[in-house]
Image (cartoon, rainbow, N blue to C red; front, side):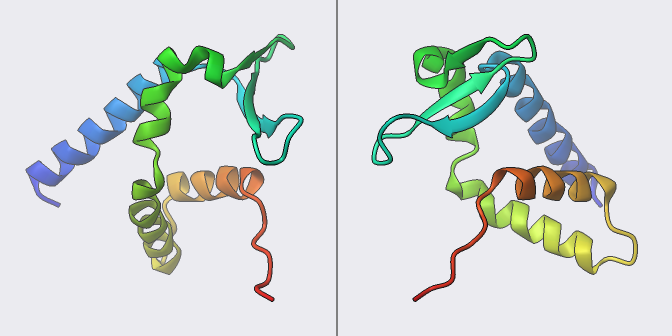
Length: 109
């Protein structure tokens, strides 16, 4: 790994962490009364809740940063870690979080 690559990885990790701290805290869950217009609600450890849309000033950058554009690079990292002799523990931790939060794929009819 080059010094530039290491600096890029560290900068991206730092920005994600900084953005996460500024965003609406809590366990985000999809809910709402209408399936066509679901809401995302942050559930705080103290039992409080906050609609993420109501806190969009703090959360918009987080949502935009984690747009579908990051899916392929993250998936490639996870696959590369799986192919490695010893998987990266951070990749395994991320995979567990994702599997716990992402819905299972439905078979195509």
